[in-house]
Image (cartoon, rainbow over all chains, first blue to last red; front, side):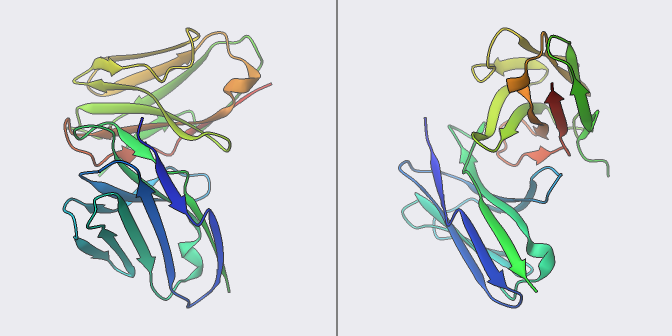
Length: 111
Length: 113
């Protein structure tokens, strides 16, 4: 089946720095979703992307749907301690369901 | 608005015991998904339902696992008998049929000793 590769696997940054992470696939996706998981909680949907080239923001978060439809990027500006968590990309395996998830990028923010 | 509700949040049981996990999807959603999350394998889809009907259970590890959705507002995932390797966090998620956006519950952390 389709697989999503996320990089980096983990990152440590200073508070206030910008963060960039990405997600790639060998197959074309028609939708990209970005989730954040806090410790002990379920993943929370942050941003959904539906068109190649689309750039969408949610507060300090910005995500882009790659032109090739095989990748997506998530950027976080001016990181704060509550940004700590695991960020997952996901996309529909076929049609619109079910979702395939990447392994996640674990973000740590050093105050 | 209430999100996806799961119970219990934590379950500790002995090997061989039956375990039942419960999920109430977001009101109005008609697709429901059960996932398992471990450090080694990440998030794995176990089974999903559309309009209370199981569509794909190919992710269910073995016959010890079963899931039901008797109505639009309730689903169960049962493990009988449980084994230590079943220890994981189990998530339920819901969505509208045909829509990719899934909304997750807080999960049930299962420990089998």
